Length: 483
Ligand code: 5AD
Ligand code: SF4
Image 1 (cartoon, protein in one colour):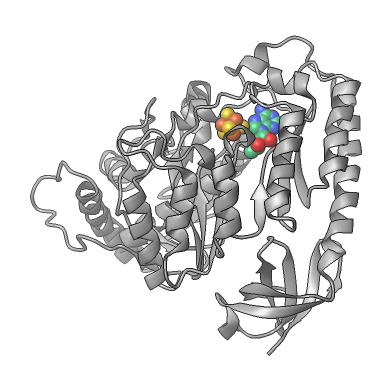
Image 2 (cartoon, helix red, strand yellow):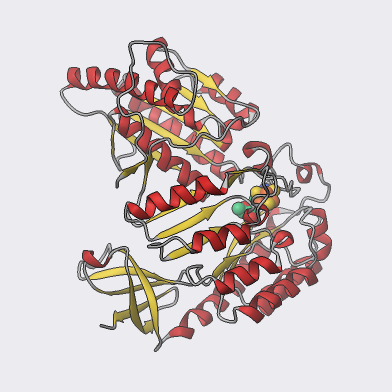
């Protein structure tokens, strides 16, 4: 794991804190570093931090950024869930994500009794909900620091305030302010990373809490994105995942608007970069211009994640998705006309309020017609404050479970049939890591995101090799590099 974009490495911390970002945060990182150094001197060991992330790729990216800040402050990251600083980056898209956090907090309460210096930090989407923050304040007073999604960049400053006061600090902003560039970066993998291109979402799908907790759509300037990717490539990155809740509407709100298709073309030109992925696309905004750009840009991977949510036009309307079953089928047809081999994956919700057996069968119909490479299936979860939570005809639990099982069977059967289709062919594979179970193997990914295990060594990581796929084992392939 390496850091990038280290600016202002030695700020003057005797004077007042700078008012501009990111200088202000570098100042507080240095202030915190001195404190951590002192405590670690007293304890005679380095302080550890555990970063536990729930939810989507955006959260994973935010956690990478926060890890970089904590390491700069002097913490050493550990896989152990108990550490001197435990940070939970939370998700609230479905209720079970919230329940998980309270379970873990209960466990940490006892651990903190053994190590009273332990700091417990909660941040991310769940903390944007006033009810949850209130619950933490009342029932979990041993939590030291709470912040939301909009002020993650202030981690060092907030932590310093907590260190100084010795009391719980809670700072949740209702709205996003500036996009702060040039904070330290860190990567889980040396050769691939996510790059935020936009934040927030304006779609207000009626079941979804994201627009309330991540705020309105804001795009980063294309020059900033390109500069970041160029620097990453200079530091050994060969694959990037462009991240946004709705990448297809990238750039619309910038003072000099630019389309996502145009951004893709520019990223595709970066020398040394080998693969480009992106996530997530909304079907209503996926333009023909983007389909052309994907088909023409050699580095853009042969994979598209295109959430369907439901196959019933009636339910799609209640979901406020702004496309019909027919629109979705026609869109996939246009995509496949230009990219016949593209791998398509999707998200589907079962049991949205008012979903009838007929509606559900429409979903099964789309699944059978499109034949997704894989699908993430979710049971509808009522999120308070969203329009769907107030809808009548919530579907009984036993009905939802039965439909969910039927959908899963269908989706898995199709996936298994599709995975086998490349056996015998030689395809480009990015080698990602050493195989966890077998030392003699490495694990890589096809452009279409499928996984393959093959004999190899660490030196191959981060590079693309032609690999012959010798066998399909359901969800992955076995293969061998062709030299
Ligand atoms: N209930 C169930 N699934 C949901 N998703 C979003 N909100 C909910 C909800 N309230 C799913 C959607 C989305 C994915 C990230 O999570 O399918 O695409
Ligand atoms: Fe939620 Fe819809 Fe926005 Fe996706 S597009 S984050 S499902 S509101």
